[in-house]
Length: 74
Image (cartoon, rainbow, N blue to C red; front, top):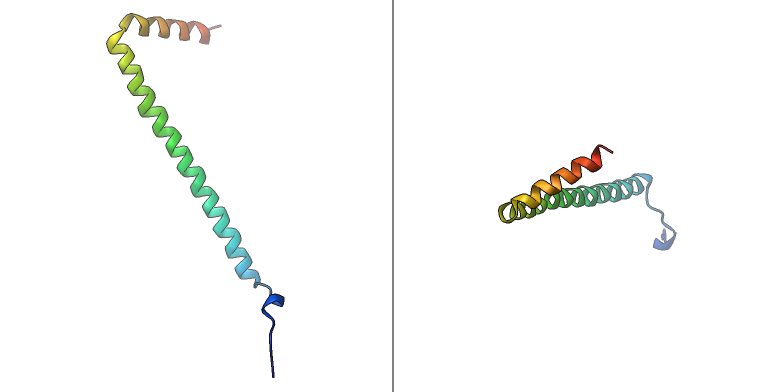
């Protein structure tokens, strides 16, 4: 009779590649999702906070802009 021990079987090379491909795709998806979360946070949250400050303290906004421009031109 022909018997095969499962513990001695190795995955075929194609299966190993597909596992590697699956891991790479999962890692890329995680990176893309994190980048999108950061983009949304940067665009919307800071934009909203900036407008809240601008609505309440217009002079403070101009002072912040002037200071930022001064620091950039050093």
